[in-house]
Length: 112
Length: 112
Image 1 (cartoon, chains in turn blue, purple):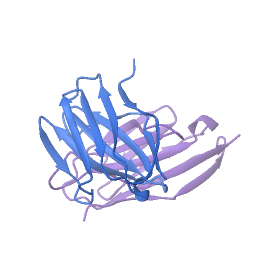
Image 2 (cartoon, rainbow over the protein chains, first blue to last red):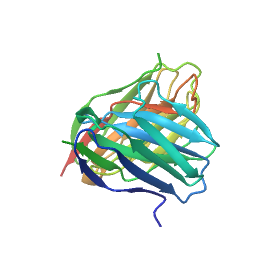
Image 3 (tube, rainbow over the protein chains, first blue to last red):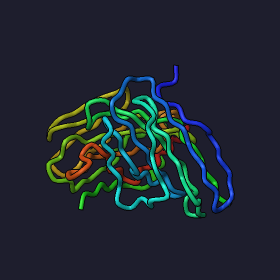
């Protein structure tokens, strides 16, 4: 059983397009996160979402928006993609923050 | 500003050659120091949480320790399968206090 899953695993798209990445967790956790890992492998928090409370890292452009249809899902929508958005995006979840986080396998986004 | 700094950036060891990885932090009111392992092409995998100075935790060949200013990940008699990037992280001290700030990681290579 996959604890945290993401789709797609790879996403290649043109500049200016809008795309979404889906994340689902089956752990019953109450908090979900999105991270960006750049080409230098630096992992940086973008959002956390807990009981409808959204915390946005101040460096995240407003082209990025998380959407949570229910407690088990936190999708990432990106408008007007730019070259600098190319990275690996990880979804994670945890219970009883702060606590150990379980990460998904990542989505490698390439913007051409 | 909350910061987590890891050293060295990369470490090559012969199989069986013990060593330590360092994680120093400047997070006020530390509420946990987390260690993760990341294999290429995968999401980080949780290893340990340490909450107070003097605390130690072990898992197979790994032992994590914590002081008031830094944490060490000791690797005893490593094997090639221990090769990975090791990340440490701490919760932010301010808003979004369950969000983690990660260090840039130490890439460990264990040579047979």
